[in-house]
Amino acid sequence: MSETTIDTAALGDKIVKVVKTIYDPEIPVDIYELGLIYDVFVNEDYEVKILMTLTSPNCPVAETLPLEVEEKVKSINEVKDAEVEITFDPPWSQDLMSEEAKLELGML
Image 1 (tube, one colour):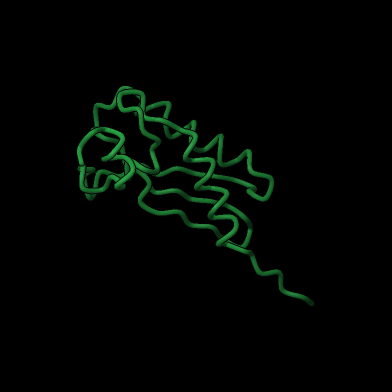
Image 2 (cartoon, rainbow, N blue to C red):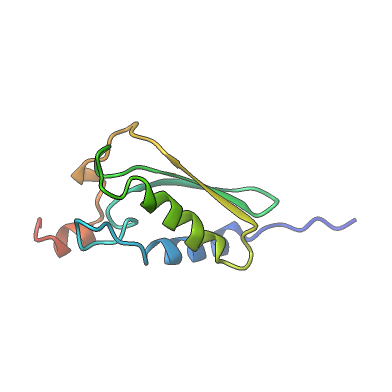
């Protein structure tokens, strides 16, 4: 019986690439660079769970953004299923943004 080990790093890179195609509608920066993705978990069954936040609980895309993330991640061949969990703990702040995002928004 051979054990298949998941190349989580490679899959993680693919997930990040896909997530970087999703933009916050109010800020012209992708949700990864904005720091909205807190964690990505992948189990042996290639099921992905993404812990993310929104810029605010009243975010206009609170309903659609998590679905968009799920759909795009599910479109990766290796991924069997994807689930997004929204959390506001810790609440999002500009400190979570990457240098790139801050530069893009003229905050540096």
